Length: 555
Image (tube, rainbow, N blue to C red):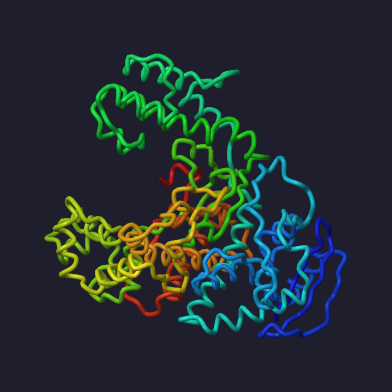
C-alpha cells in the first residue's frame, strides 16, 4: 500500500491519502491534526510506502516526534534522477515544478540551498518547509506527479535497474535523516585535548600559538615580514620573488619545491585547516550533548555520492578522530569497502578475466599474478590509470599490459571517455546520468566542494576524463547506497544505529553485546548489494570490518 503525505507549513497537521500502485487514489483525503501521530499509527499497522515531496522536509520532524518509517518514495530525488536520465540535468525538481511542466505552466525555480544551522540554533517547529514548496503542494499534485514518475520509470533504458536506483535513493534519504538525528558520539573534552596538543591553547584574539610560530618561520624563510601563509596569492608571489614559479599552493605542488619555507608551509596548511574547519568554534557549534549532528545530503554531488550542509562530516581529519568515542558499554562497527571502484569496473564491464581477479581478496595482487609478473604496484597503476585517464609516466607501459590482458574492461572506460568528449551522456549501471558538458556542476553550500566542482562547462579531453570515471564512481556510489538500505533493514529490532557514512565506509554504533550481530549484518549486506546490482557475478565486494571503542582505532 502507498500513502501520500503533505505537511502544513510550520505546524503539526497535514493530509494523507492512500494510493494504488499506479498513483491513482485508493481512498479519500484525510486531514489530520497530528501528522506525526497519524503516520506513527499507520506505520505500526501496515508499513506503507510513504509518498512525499521531500524526505528532508518531512522525516526529521517525524524523528523528533519519535516516529520512524520503513519505506518512502521521495518525489524530489526521483524527479532529479528522471530529469537527468532525459538529458535535462539540473531543471527544477520540486513536485510543483514537475506538475507545471506537465501542464505547460510557468515552472517555479527551486529555492536556493538553505544555509545549515548548527544544532544549537535549530528551530523547534515539527515540520520545517525551509523555503521549499512542501507546504504549497496539494495532495492531487503529489498524486499526479507520482503517477507520472511511475510511468516514466517504465520508459527508462533499463527500467528494473532504474527502479532499484529510485528505491535506494529514497532509502538513503531516510538513512541520512536518521544519522543526523542519532548523531555521532563526540567527546568535546578529548577534542579540546587534541587541539591543544596540535595547536597550543586558544588565544583571546588571533590564531593559536603553533600557527603564530609557523607564520614566523615562513616569513623568516622568505626573508619577509607580514606574509600571511593562509593567502595563496601572497605565497605564490613570495616564491616568485625567490625565483620559483608555482601555479598554486596545493600540497602536492609544494612538495616538489626545494625551499626552506616548504616544510613549515605544509604544516601550517594542515593545522590551519583543522583550526578553521574543526577547531574550538566548530565544536562549540556542532557538538551538542555529546553528539555531532550534521545534515546529510544524499545524492548531493553528480556522481550520487553524499554531501553535507555544514559541519563537514565527510571531511573530519584523522587528527581529531580520537574524540569520536563510543558510549560506555557500546562499540563502533566500522566497515570499509576496499578496492571498491576497481571491483565495480570488473562487474559492469563484463570482462571475465578481470572479474576472476575481482573474486580475490586483493584484486591488485590477483592482477599482478595474472598479468603483471607479480608487480602489484604496476597492476594498481594500470587499473587506476584506466579509470582516471592517466596517460603519462609509469602509467604508459602498465596501461599497455592492461589493454592487452583485459580488453573488455579497457574498452568500457574508453567508450565512456569518447562519449564524454563528444558531449554525450553516460550512465551508471542503475541509470544515474552524467550532466551534459554545458551544465554547472557546483551545488552551492554543500561539502565537499572538490566533487561538486567537477568540470564546469568542460569539453573535449577534460570531460572525457570525467565521464570515464563517472561510469565507475557513480556505480560504486549505487553499491554503497544499496548496502546502506539493506543494512538499515537488517538492523531493525536492534539498538544499533548507523551514525556515519563516508563514500564507501559506514560506521554503526551499537551495544557491545550486539557487535557480533552487526558485523554479520554488514557483511551480509555487502554480499546482497553485489547481488542486487550485478546478479550472478564472480566479483566479490569484501569489507574491512573493525569493532572499536574509538573511531581512530579503526584506521
